[in-house]
Image (cartoon, rainbow, N blue to C red; front, side, top):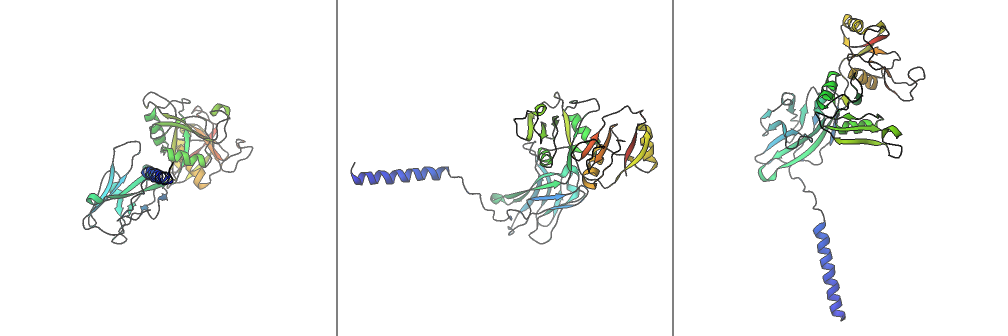
Amino acid sequence: MHPGVLLTWVVASFAWTSAVHHYHRPAAPKKLRYLLEPPVYAEVSARRGANATLPCLLRARPAHYKVKWTKLQPHRPGVEDIILITNGHEQRGYGSLGPRAFLRRAHTLDASLRITRLGLEDDGRYRCELVNGLEDESVTLTLRIEGLVFPYQSQEGRYRFVLREAREACERQDARLATYPQLYRAWTEGLDWCNAGWLDDGTVHYPIIHSREPCGGRALLPGIRSYGPKEPTRDRFDAFCFTSPAPGRVFYIEGRLTYAEAAEACGARGAEIARVGHLYAAWRFAGLDRCDGGWLEDGSVRFPISAPRERCGGLPEPGVRSFGFPNKTLREYGVYCYR
């Protein structure tokens, strides 16, 4: 081949391959003009009952604009839960969060959202959107309610809840059906449970720290085992519930009490029988450690162990131990009360 022809072919080939490479190169993310990105904090943590501020700051103010705050619902595509809309002068709240949501207004470029009296349902992802015609911009933040996940089973035995029943069972125990991020975080903190349970999005999973035969086999690495989405009105599993510290306190009353006598004993002290979520929160966040089984509101008998020892269940890790659901007429246990 003539050297000039060869050079032309090489240059053309290089130009063609460069063009192909350029064609497949992902576009750089568009730089926001008005909103500060990334936000001051991408994740904000707070406890139930407290207040939290989700930061959203403007670099500059367009002549005409609105800021819209929404709570994202990943398992409900197309649903937009609007919380608040403001034009910089006035604001209007929407939905269940509206009465508890306000703009912080620390300065003229501050569009941060302040949520008061946080509840378990406030955990999740939020979007701050600047609406300005063709130049709409948004940033996304996460509000994490500090808490823990616990597995919950029907008193009738294993795998008895359809999705609605799992949701109701958690709510009766001062909790909510956990989300996948909450279960994942609980797994990283040591939750190891071999029974599958519903999550809030209608999927079913279970977390494994120690791989073993009954739980997917020894060959599988530790992780979240998944059954994927299941039929919510037909399939039955346990539940994974999420709770957070409540304002009250859990205390124990000694004695050999029936369930009815336990309820009376708590009532006489201006309290109620503690729910399962109360006991788990007291164990995790207040360090409650007691070797005595006590009645709880659902009719189960449990006890919290923060410092594992042989005579208190013999298990090597901290946790809430369970005696199941004994006959309520037995006089064998004390009671855990919540006030």
